[in-house]
Amino acid sequence: AEAPLKILYKDAFHIGAAVNPITIESQRSLLAYHFNSLTAENEMKFSSVHPQEELYTFENADVIAAFAREHGLALRGHTLVWHNQTPDWLFENETGGLVERGVLLERLKAHIQTVVSRYKDVIYAWDVVNEVISDDADDQNAYLRPSKWLDIAGENFIAKAFEFAHEADPQALLFYNDYNESDPHKRERIFRLVRSLLDQDVPIHGVGLQAHWNLYDPSLDDMRAAIERYAQLGLQLQLTELDVSVFRFEDRRTDLVQPSQEMLELQAERYESIFRLLHEYKEHISAVTFWGAADDYTWLDNFPVRDRKNWPFLFDESHRPKEAYQRVARIV
Ligand code: XIL
Image 1 (cartoon, protein in one colour):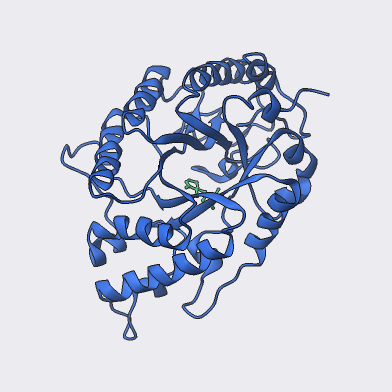
Image 2 (cartoon, helix red, strand yellow):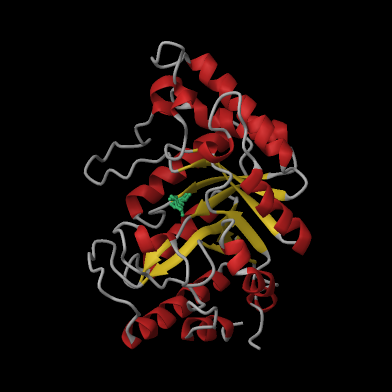
């Protein structure tokens, strides 16, 4: 059998995978063999665990936590504050208008206390705040993404979330997580946010680079520049949601039932250069988590285009190592 990725990279960083209650069954042996870290793909998000103010639903999240405990895997928590997969009740008062700032922060505190405390024994790192930086490419002054969080509470909800998480579990490593993290404009906005949190003595310990990449974008130079820039913050870095789509983002084609040889070859080269780069920065990078594990299941099958099958991982639909795996394995 092929060498486990987690062993090959044990002196560099954790090798993680996002899982859900279905893949944790169907990919069980692959997960236990190659990976030493997990993230819940959806099951710990606000809507999943706290759909109503008085109702917490932990069944699915508990399944993932139990699997991590059972196999001695590291577990990352994902995510406490986001603009997606967050229930409306959180922002509403009794008459359906927006709540007051103080009420929103009280609710956030209660949520974080409950969720973070529950998994204190097994979760070592939390994506506390996800995707609050603007993607606006035209407006040079753009900074934070418009959201109900921002409308109601102002910028301060970000610092508060980190403080509440730190109170709930002082041992946990707390991350800011975002995508398009290698884009030069967004990179500087993310840098500015994290720097300002550090200047305010907010407990934050890492920057998560989602790394939803493809065969062509971003460039290796932009990836390197992003790693170098974030490293200047003096925090640890993690790739939190790595996948290498065989399509360009805007490619609409939905007809392919298997990847072409050319795609697989390009993907192998691409993964090799990515892992060479990551390995070069292993002093700064503590974990590399894929947003899935093998090509039989990826969220990219439905994003950004529905029914566009994708093959973004190192393992194929039958969990066999792809050429990309071979290239990643022989670097170390
Ligand atoms: C995605 C999940 O993979 C999908 O199943 C869900 O429908 C939408 O969310 N950035 C994140 C992740 O931080 O939480 C997202 O996960 C992918 C983009």
